[in-house]
Image (cartoon, rainbow, N blue to C red; front, top):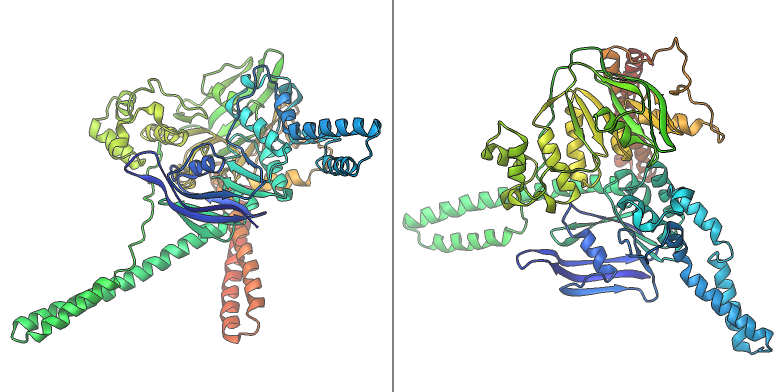
Length: 633
């Protein structure tokens, strides 16, 4: 059954450019679709059209009759005085109407109404009410609230007093509790912590309806979608698979189109040379050759069917590293922080050596950003002290980006932040970060969250630094921008401390994990994949961690190791990721070998390929062993 049908959809917000230009696609019942495209491609605009929030210029949009659509990014306005609990309970409005009708029918039957219509209607309502869980809504609310990190004290707060991220979580909970047939998710993971993201993934796996998700979280897309619709220049491109399939298939299609274009251009060049020769010979006395040349030129024009495929130009700017002199970058001694009666953490004793890459993780509200602000001197500890090394030069990207004068345009913002920069150099620098043409004269206040992040990074990357602190660096960035910042961080050879819920980013860079939980920080001197395995192996009743900031062996020092060990640990994490990818490739080859069992030539080629892949895996395992020994693990 077709749930969503879009045909020839057009939408523009100005006369010059159509955001959606003939968009056409269909989504069937129960499908899990990822809606991809760069920022500004029209994804959120499409969602607003599907929910009827805005109108469109041309085309047709149809939602299957009787299907209820819920949009996560859309935060309704609730009556004044509504608490979070009231908002969550509003999901059961339809059930309450059913309960009222059942009560009315029950009263009629008690007064002697035994008509077939009354009994049938009461039976239908009763079965449906029970099927929707109407007799036990409290359990459903508690389950969703726990999964989305909506604690009991937050449920008593006024909805209007919540932050934007908290409102998004509550609204997500309300839509999950509703009997929604089609879920439209617009960046649902942006304001969720790791625990809530994984809970949402598990919920979607069991959700019976249709899901359409806009997301730049590659792990989330891989775990939740089975089909991709990419909006490209106002049109739809289709990929039957998850994000990993899409990434490989998109590159394959680009290379295939480029080969087709180059082959076509080579043939055209050959025919053009032949036509030129015919014209030359015609001028030498054989006029009949002109006709053949003109015929050949018409054939050349008919051959021009393939446009040269284009790629989005990548940003190539990198952090400018400054040499670090000394042993310790950062020391925290007995650090504690409270707000009123609420203690975030206490007794934190940690040391950071040069070259380490540390992920600070934990649920929302545990104090991760507060700790970062204390390191930056924006907040002060209630107890203990924080000390930076004497040669440390910090670059800091905060979670919430603010500019001193947001009314300034981009060029002036650069000029006021850098004393030794000229207007032309500022424009060149901005162009490297994809701010070109008239965009550089926009007011900073009108930039999107992703554009503001890019502008702040543009300003940061002009300084020489050796300690990089990032607070949710990939939030609001599209996938291309995430890949760029990942490449820039990969090339940075200084010390890295970052807060992130992007599992791909954490897995790629963390060589050490700080977990902030239950008012203390647990130090795991290992990569994210190994940390996850260790957490998964813990019994249901939480065991005492190996190291905590409250209980430590006074004679034991954190295994920081020398610089060679630190470098080996970084390479070890990368090697583990390559081994996992190689094992996946071998598993895929095994499937292809089974399919090709009846084709000797194909089977032989695949078997040779598998032997080569196994040799590569063996080499990677040997490299892993050498790195593990070098890293002291």
